[in-house]
Amino acid sequence: MKAYVFPGQGAQFVGMGKDLYDNSPLAKEMFEKANQILGFRITDLMFAGTDEDLKQTKVTQPAIFLHSVILSKVLGNDFKPEMVAGHSLGEFSALVAAGALSFEDGLKLVSARAMAMQKACEKEPSTMAAVLGLEDEKVEAICNSIDEVVVAANYNCPGQLVISGSIKGIDIACQKLTEAGAKRALKLAVGGAFHSPLMEPARQELETAINSTPFNQPVCPIYQNVDAKPTSDPEVIKKNLIAQLTAPVRWTQTAKNMLADGATSFVELGPGNVLQGLIKKVDRNIAAESKQTL
Image (cartoon, rainbow, N blue to C red; front, side, top):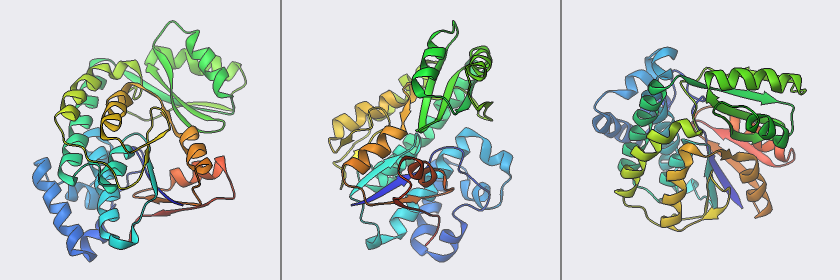
């Protein structure tokens, strides 16, 4: 079975999506529609901006979403997913690619999500850190022992986990994790504590937007971040999408479940190649590739 996966924040680069815009009339039309919906020319920043421009959450999230989704649409009949999943923001790309959300509604939600997250980040300074070479359970136990907000946020692949929380909480955790034998505990250059309780104000804001958006049954099951299980039920999809901002991304479990359910190949659509690498850490013999253009 053919699985498609969609990347999240961090995969952006200057020039992303430009050859789609230049070589496909459909892509050009969709990008221009996105400029209208967003109220600014995001294509200028994607194709010829600076790394700094693309680092702003309100630009990063729609940019990655657009690259992934427009590529899936331009592929036309070559895009025949039998299962899909997306990492964090990528879950929205997966839902649009699989027909559960319209392009316009997906983009509006992604933009609303980015703005809400930006606001939550400004409210309380917070961050994330990558932890390498420790078992998940050990990382969880250390996070639980700290009197600050600090939680496991992304289960990326065996031996690689990202934690999220207050700056103080992350500092204490990095020290304790290193003492406990982690190969690395490295703070990430992100704007805030995504997938942690500190995102609660953003979750509430997004809940209102999601509840007023029409969702359809996707063409194939989507494996969602919150529980790593497949679903095609629009109501379940909405509930999981609302929970996503304050809950961990269970990517390791998602990859394992897709493999157990019969995935024979994975294609990562959009910028970067992080996800196919993570999937290969779960099963190094699986066929996995990244596709950024036609």
